[in-house]
Length: 120
Image (cartoon, rainbow, N blue to C red; front, side, top):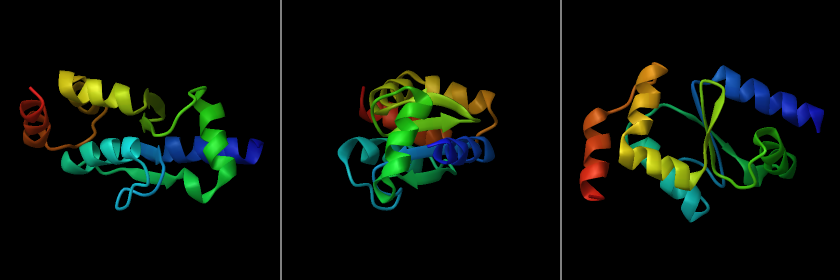
């Protein structure tokens, strides 16, 4: 399991934004992963996606790594941000915009505003 932990640690530190998810950003395999990937895709965020369904060790390893029981899991600049509910709340409140701004992550501010408008 330490090999998996090392692999996960290297992945989250080597990429500005990483989404551990069921499926891929092009083809999510669950509703929660689809929601988070959809937000990131719509906002034009460049991110690495890791399909936990492709490797059972990674699927369990990411839960152990973050001490968070569910997938998807979003990481920004090596830090665990949260799962679907947290990312949804952060998107709607504008906190995700602030997090991206503070960490130099490029995203489409107009798209973020449109998500908030559609959910107002």
